[in-house]
Length: 345
Ligand code: 5GP
Ligand code: MN
Image 1 (tube, rainbow, N blue to C red):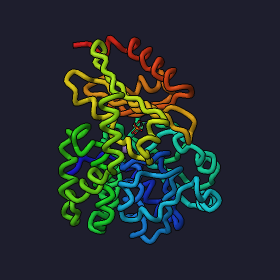
Image 2 (cartoon, rainbow, N blue to C red; image 1 turned 60 degrees about the vertical axis):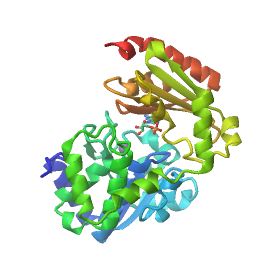
Image 3 (cartoon, rainbow, N blue to C red; image 1 turned 45 degrees about the vertical axis):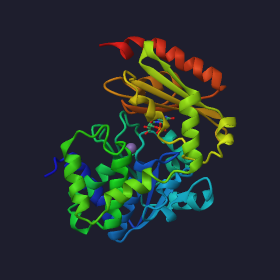
């Protein structure tokens, strides 16, 4: 049995909205990850089974390794179909905001969502949600938004109607936001949920292979290059850093998603508690920062204080406007500021 995580008031309120709604739009954050896509498609399948017209809209492209997901082909990219998407957003009865806690995470889509007269509901697991939705289902203690979607469907009394396609999407989000159940995944109820998803006929081993074992040769060689040439370990700070410039990306025929997960690798070095990955992003003219930590080191605080970002205790990110060298200097300043917390026994 599952603990009741989502409040009864929120369930009742949502039921009223969904009973009345015909047109639903689901939006998620810029550079959508497995949980963003998994939770959005999971909810989409569920609401479609309830007879709703549902559109999933994301700000920009998502990685190739998520394209197999049922329904992924119908996801609208705002950057590509802006006018059409604007119409859907403005005309929706309800907009679900999944896997993000602040409008700015919608990037260029934020204004359209803010301006829409639709009722808005947030379902998310990032701390400190901003106030832009009437219904706020925010549970930082839950390891993925996809898990919240599973819990929502159960609480609506519709587990029996959950399709295999829906279960595949939910599982993918739960798996990717916990690194294949290797972090943030000690809550025993996660494994009860997996068991329930398996009862829907999902092939979790195949899902793992589709997500994690479909990399290109270019990515493999890029990984070798960055680990050999671009990894800096700071033993006095229990930290590691990988940087990747635009020129280096070009050298390895980089496509979006090729550096996914690189930031996690240095955490397997003994003693490393914080890992940072800095990538020059020419599309957005900035350096994208990814931070990961183990234990209780709050990498989201470092992201917020030094890189205008945020996220979770152990997985966060931010942005830096300037050169790579300047970004590295900023990171080193952050290390000094956080040295005590990084090195405490
Ligand atoms: P990633 O390193 O995979 O891009 O991001 C990890 C987590 O950090 C995301 O799930 C999100 O919570 C957070 N994050 C990443 N980039 C940003 C950012 O620019 N701003 C904020 N507020 N959070 C971010
Ligand atoms: Mn998530």
